[in-house]
Image (cartoon, rainbow, N blue to C red; front, side):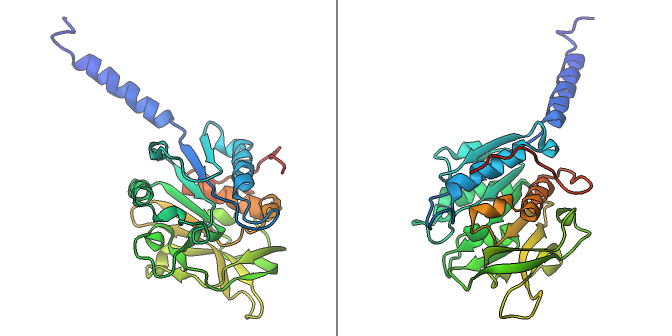
Length: 270
C-alpha cells in the first residue's frame, strides 16, 4: 500500500511521538529577582535567587526540571517565560522604581501564564503592589496582596503550620526565627480557595492571629503560594523555611510532594 496515498499511519505515528514528547516534558521553573534595596543580606534578591535556584537543582524532586534564574529582574526578552510550570518572584514590588510589575508587557505575560494554569510563588515584597493600584491583578493571581507599604513587623517570630494536611506543610514543625513579616494582607473574596500554611505569633497581637504564608487554588486549576517573610538572605537556609519553599514550588508546579517534604542537598552557600 502506497503510504504517500494513505498517510494516515504516518500521521498517527507523528501524533503518538508528539504526545509522548509532550508527556515527557518535565517542565520549567523560572525565578525572577530584582535590585537590592536594603543593607547587608537584606532584600538581597541578586543572591537569594541563585541560592533558591541551587536548592531546587540539588533536589531529587525536581530531577529533569529546567531551572532558569534572573537574579537582577525580569529578562528583556519575555518570551523565555513561555511554557513555565511555576514562576517564582522575589523582588521589591513597591520600593524598586519603577515597580517591576507596573510594565504592561510584564503584566500581560504573567497573565498568560496564569490563564494557562502555571504556578506562581511570591516571596516577601513581591506580593506588594503600589497603593491603590488597579492594573496589577495580584489578588486574582496570588489570592492576596499587600497594598503599598502597609504595616510590617521585624522580630524573632514563633510560627506554626496552619494546615498540616496540605502538601506544602509536609514535614513542617513549629519553629521560631527572625524575619520581617507583613501582617496586613488583602485576601480574595473567594476565601474557600485560600489555605493558610503558616500562622505567626506577631507581637503585640494575640498568638496565631496572622497568616504569613498561604496557598491559593485558582479557579482554572492553577496554584499559587505567597510568603511575606524573606527579608533576610539567611532565611533561605533556615531548615523549615527552606522545606516550605521547596514544597510550595513543587506543589505549584503540580509535582508530588514526597513524604517528609522536599529535600535538597549541597545548596549554594552565600
